Structures are given as structure tokens and as C-alpha cells.
Image 1: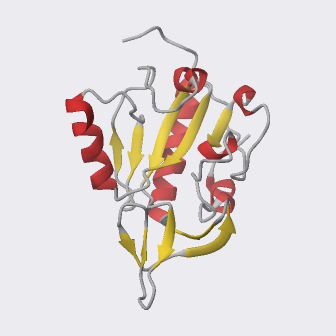
Image 2 (image 1 turned 60 degrees about the horizontal axis):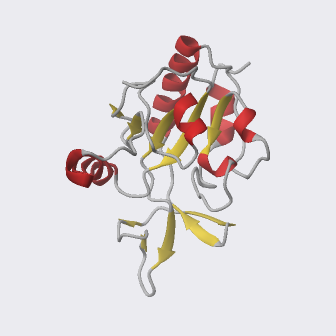
Length: 185
């Protein structure tokens, strides 16, 4: 285990594929030596999967400071989707299929996979527990747009808060539900 760092934030991301496929990819990439692990994955069923202990350094994000001081939570979500002509379904970048979409133009995309209430409830419980244990302020950025200086924020953010090229969490993420149910400060 590497040097311990003060945990100051939770970063929400997407799997960008089916959850079981994402978990298998973590297990087998680089012959099992893949070092871009989130701490947790929350499947659409609400099941919580711990993939890395908090405090163990990961290379999940491109910024070392974010990796050192953050807990990474990946929500199972296909991300942005493409409508399949003459059909009722949508596909993501690797061909995962869904027929339930959220429509909103954002970052040059129009269709987004949705998050489930079960995921949101598991996320709220997990965030409350992590904030309590690591004394992370119970506050969050209630949107998914770029924020200058986000590296100084302590609390809950999404990957899209520090990069205009990232699309997680997507516009279908219900920040209002999080606000209503999270024990925020």
C-alpha cells in the first residue's frame, strides 16, 4: 500500500458499459495488473461492489492529486447513446443496447442512459457512510458542468466537473433526488 493521503472528496463516474462487463474488464485487463480501479461500482440493481480499498492509490483518473485524495464511485451506466435507425433501441460506443433513454443535448450528444432509483439509494447511503468515516464535508456540486478550481473542492463531485471532454455523470443523473435525500451540510 502506498503512502496514505487525506481523503477529501468523492468523485462520481460511469462504467460506460454494462456493469458486469466493466467488472470483468477490471479483472482481466493487463493480465490482472490493471491499475485504473475505482473504489466502488454500483450496479443498476443497487448492488454495491467494492473493487479497491479506500486509501490505496489508483490511477483511475488522469490527475494524480485526484487519485490520491479521492474515493472513486462508478455507477453502472452506458453513457451517451446513438439511436439505431428504424428501430426502437439505442446503442452505446461498444454496442450495449437499451430502449430507455433520457433525451438532452449536452456536450454534442443527445441520448443518455438512465440511472435507477436503487442505484441512487445505494449511492446516498455509501456517500453518507464515507463522508462520516473520512470527515469529508457533506456537500456536493449539484450539476455536471466544468468548474474552475474544482481541485480545491472538498465534498462530492462528478468527473464532468473537471473536464469538458468527460460525460459522467450524464444529464440523466438526478441531482435533485440526491439533494432531497442526502444528509448534506
